[in-house]
Image 1 (cartoon, one colour):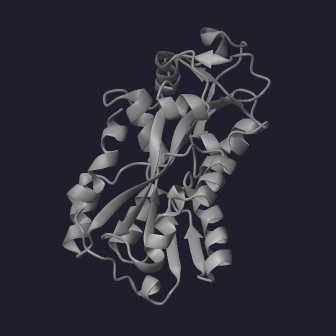
Image 2 (image 1 turned 120 degrees about the vertical axis):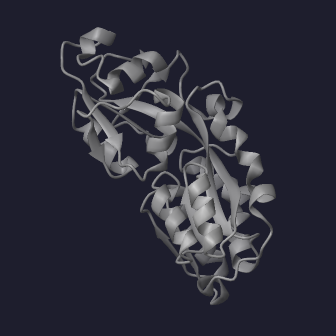
Image 3 (image 1 turned 180 degrees about the horizontal axis):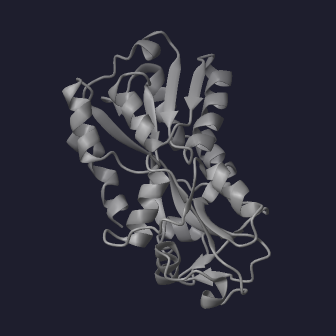
Length: 273
């Protein structure tokens, strides 16, 4: 729930300066950051360019790198699957950048396994135990007699940070046996091709190639994410340098529009507004 409490602090905490990035001034937009927010950003970009004629570039280098891009003024909008950290805000301010937080959508962190795995549900305690290396065989959590292949994200991933906060806690490190993948899509592909694997992805990446588990008995879907009963729910963000104006504001306001809401639902995520 800590992530959700931070949602409403952005504009008040981070100031009201107007963005003056060169790309926005030149009537084009550059976005960088989260691979989780990526599908929404790319769908928004296609719609925005089609309806306004403004070209939009979307890169998916991870939430941490999105924050760096905003700090270094190389993007107009940073896509992030976690709130900006205090040290990122401080670094931004030292360079004359005033980050303002905008909630784009809601997401559920889906725990995924291969469709052939007979495990359908895990508790957060069991997931934590798997990732700490306490459980090393699926038979220990109701599955087949097979070694568990643990898949995680890289260190600059907002999804990795969310998983650590929502599942692991501060004092429970992830096992050194965990394999690292660079994106939601890479984790999905690895789990889909590996019968004994377990991983975690944003809700919009769940399809028939993998199976999303119930967590604490709750299915990850739009309803349970929206009402907060799915325990691994979180917000997805876009950050601007100051309060947005012009084409940046038009883009940032898309989640509040009927078309933007349709796009968010079609990409598998959950509308916030």
